[in-house]
Length: 252
Ligand code: PEP
Image (tube, rainbow, N blue to C red):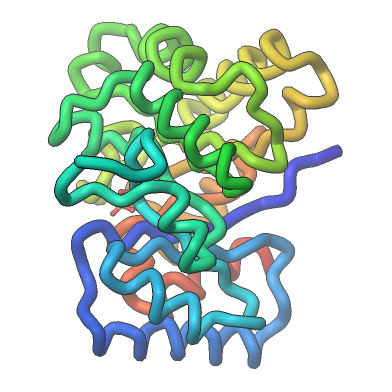
């Protein structure tokens, strides 16, 4: 089955209690405009997940988390588990974002363990992959994205129902730079081929592959039109409801 598109927002370490007003504005926009042909997800910081879930209850936006620990509970100061995230009724967890790979030295093996922890709780993992500028310049993009990251980060029993791939070139995140449509399509095609090879035709073609990196209302439609692009993972432009809704417009 063709993947259902997803437009997901990653608020990173941004947002305080009063930021719920942006979620409310987004819900208003979703209520009052044509329903998009995609799912919508917002991943606020952990401090806001619970209150966002309450506000979004029954609405056209799901709430997710930005990371989790591999264990269910225990002596891991400062961490939160996928079980805790499920307990507050979030639906998705981002794992392996490049900022976590860089800031916390997360390896693809750890990312796979995190994705498995997400699956064990019945939630969906958004598994992020992407090359640095130096890796792209060295001609290593496909090797890094597919071999070093994707194939090592995906659990053996991943399914389209519980796993979404997000291709996010590190050099495009928060910089205003984006790859050409041809470059996006080339990487997404390689990701798709690797998924088909690993999981077979039907399952491999069912995974949604998001593009992330400086997606904005002005470039979303074009980026989302590239082959094998099934939605977006959006950082900065997801903080304002009007901008995020402008990206969702690509699916109206
Ligand atoms: C991200 O961090 O996932 C991201 C894509 O950020 P931005 O949209 O700000 O480039």
